[in-house]
Length: 282
Image (cartoon, rainbow, N blue to C red; front, top):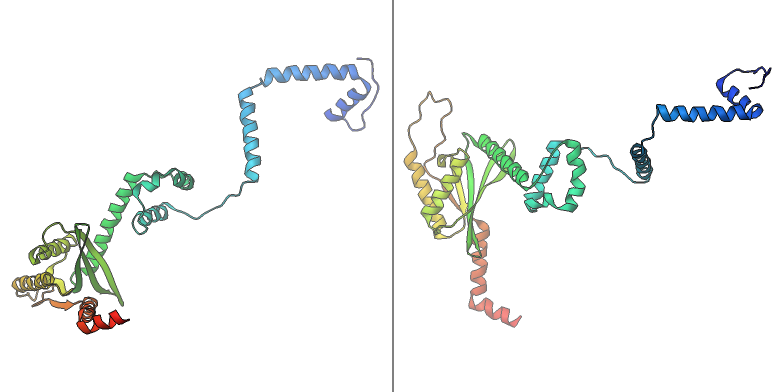
């Protein structure tokens, strides 16, 4: 480079480069070539890395224009919601594997580190049912309660429904103990055995039953009479030293369902000759 007597007012690498570019172009071109060669040696080109960086930049730009939401969710709430979906809402267990539904919940599953399929949701329902059984059993230990039982049949299938009513705190609680498929004959003995079997599942005794509400069918009424008789046979003397004695009554009150009774009364009126005549003239 030719001798240069210029003195930079503000000496710096940037100002020196500008001076070379303006007053010594050949030297500046040589400097640029040396810098390019050195960069190639120090930072070899990685096409794949550049593609990844470009992809990330593009994705970031797209994200700027894509609306996103933030939700409050924990694993317990997530599982409870799925249980409600397949029980209260009546959805199939396989719904958790539907492609459209997975697009909604997969980000949540990933964030909570949870996996879910039809088998796992089935297990969750079983666990929840077991917890409910324990809660009802604990609330009814050493207490009186009332039952409501009824059988319904449809398409050659019968189901025996058993509800329990009791006071918890200041509130009347109504819980379903069972909706048991009833494949045997609807006899009083079979109804009685099913009720006792369901009570035992909750660690409850027939001696705790204060009343049973049924329709007016003879098999139902007879089942209550048989349970009341069985309870009376189980009554024994209680020791004064019993810390938590079992509650035992002499008999179970049999209550006829008012809705069933009213239905029969209305049916009798509609079937009467006078009512039929009036309806035909209407």
